[in-house]
Image (cartoon, rainbow, N blue to C red; front, side, top):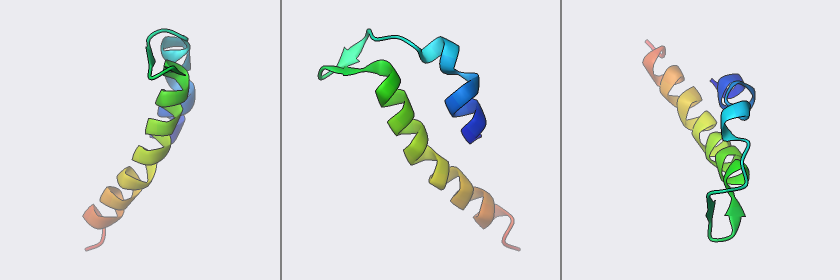
Length: 50
């Protein structure tokens, strides 16, 4: 999942506009992907914990 979020979607998310609060979209995308990755790992661990 992190590879897809960071590298696979890069050609689609590589834009300056739209900017939210003056922050470029690509930066917001990387921050969101960084925050979602531990959540995805935790959900996978929890589902496979049995």
